[in-house]
Each structure stands twice: as structure tokens, then as C-alpha cells.
Image (tube, rainbow over all chains, first blue to last red; front, side, top):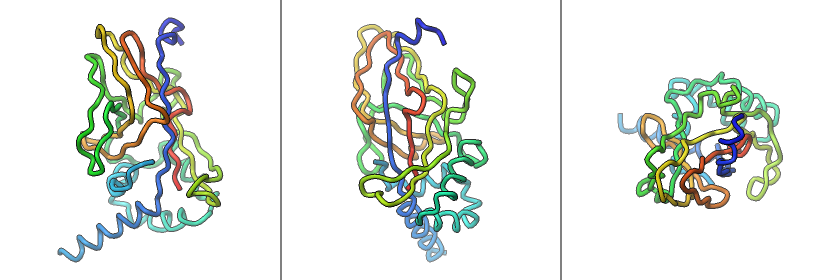
Length: 38
Length: 177
């Protein structure tokens, strides 16, 4: 690691939770809507 | 918190939609408390065994999007570029992710969550533009130039000339609940 570059580092942090239950429901709803439209 | 409005887009980003039926059982099981399954899934992500239909690239926001995904402002310094999440980082490790599960907290208390972290540093271009100063408040993941998902940084982070915005190892964390 280049020490000179490392001195310039500005650290950021992210810590997020993805609720797959909600995502899956949304996906199912979308598929049902598409089927109904066909 | 990820905006779940983008649920479908996240699925499209993480899992090839052609295989959705294949993942139905997986998603059903993920709603339960099967820590082995979650660990296997995190491991599959970590080992790049899951196909990405689009290359996910990470962007930095100085203004977060509205609920419908519009209205965001991306970092504006001259040298700024989005960073691919599927490439290898400076230490030669694939950027995303690390396998494992942990106990959920808050609204996810009592559930096991799969944890995906960056296992190499995520480095954005150095800011060479003179007298530049902005505050990064959030991030977005784009695929084919579409905003797939976004979230807030743990804390707004000011950046300025001659700095290099980075996420150090294991500081960019997704938890799958």
C-alpha cells in the first residue's frame, strides 16, 4: 500500500439491511400484475 | 436502511431474473431462521457464484434520492468516477464480499441475517480539483446506468481537495434479513 496515498484516504462507512421478505413480496406482486396484464 | 421500493430492481441486480423460480425456495427459506442457508448464500455471493445480469457500480451522493429514486445529486469533483463492485481491489481481493451470518438487531432481532462486506478497500478517484468541498451523505448502486438501490452513509462525510474517498475493508456492509 502506498503510504503517501493512504494519508489522503477519507474513510466512509455504510451498514444497511435489505429485507428480503419485503423484496420477495414486491417481486411476487409484480409478477402477478404482469400475468394479469397478459 | 435500503429503500425497499427498489426491491424488484435489487433482485434483478443480484439474481438473474431468468432463474427467479430457482430462487423461490431460497427466498422462502430466507424469511425463516435457517442460518446455514444464509451462510451458504453469503458464501455464494462472496465467491462470485451468483450471476450478476448487470455490473453493479457504486456511486456517491451529496443529496440522497427521493422515495421514487429521483432527485439525487452525485459527487461532482472533476476526477470522480463510479467504482465497480465486482472487480478486485488494490490488495487483489474481490471487493464484495465476506460470508457469514450474525444475529439481527432492532426490527430484525431474533432473526439471523446474512452479512456481505467488502473484503478489499473501495477507492474512489483522488480529488485534484482546487477548492473543492462537499459532504457525501449516501451511496447508490447502479446497473446499466439505472439506480438499483441506495442507502445512507452511517454518518455524512465531508470530502475536499487532495482527499481520496474510500470504504476501508468491511466498512461497506450489506445485511440480508
